[in-house]
Image 1 (cartoon, helix red, strand yellow):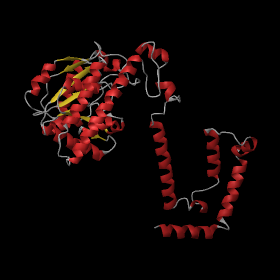
Image 2: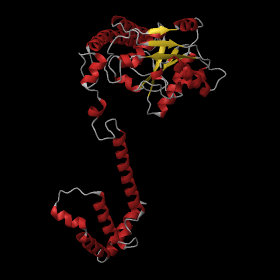
Image 3: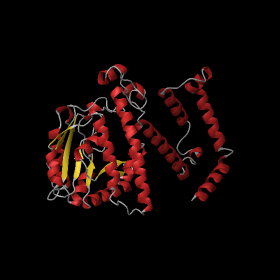
Image 4: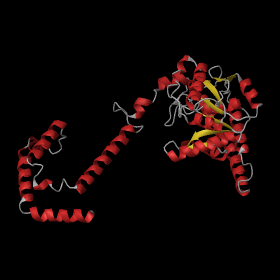
Length: 388
């Protein structure tokens, strides 16, 4: 096919080099020299042309050539059309990527000027000693919380790496269910919450204690609008071997990523369809093995605090495994750590509450029915400003 097009091009060039091409160039030169745009070029070579002037140039040039003119035979060939189509598609793809990038703002302002809060706004949230950094705002409490988390995190990291070494030497036979890494992570979380006075209030915790006595596994789901939701979730579940469905990007977070990989948590790449299918299979096996599984069915944090639509992955896992779903309503977490803060701006106190709801059995229900019932239960425990 390529050879045929090559001979076609050579033949056309030989056939029209004395007549067609010279005629085409003469017409193009005449039309271009008489166009308003060409005359303006002599006045200012650095002028930026608007859309009307470009349209004038386009119409002037196209007026000198007919579709059947010899100079257009080459441009109508399949090879030329394929190259032209590929170039346009690539240009459109680049435009789409730029428009959808996080740095693209509809009004043309930079992200720093449109998304970042002013110092006065930060001080209204976190007090007079609040300040901003490139990766989030801080105040004195947040600084103390962060330093405590990192100091404890170094112990967590060291203990987890020691477990990884033993696990590797044993040929992955030691602690197959990865209970020890989860236990170490829970120790880190409980110590952090106690030392920083960050424990939330928990309502209906007896529901969980009663369920644990049954010896069954369940899918635990909750709304998600703050980084603090994860330690709040762990505090509510207690000293159990549980796994969290986590996005792949969290593996890059220092200390936390190491804990996720060692703890055998279910990791999903949201851009990879194959990874999503493997996550589904892994989640079903986890529940069937009697291990608690936790998920945030919104798929990401809600920036405005209101409950977002659910994705069906968690409910599909519970349905396929025949496991019940336990809904949790986390209230007020965004007030403790808004999305633009690096660490919490104050202790939980009376501002944060976790409401535990009765388990919803998946047997005898469709996935859609299961998701709808769970969603209604979560909404019932949320304050008005967090309801959709």
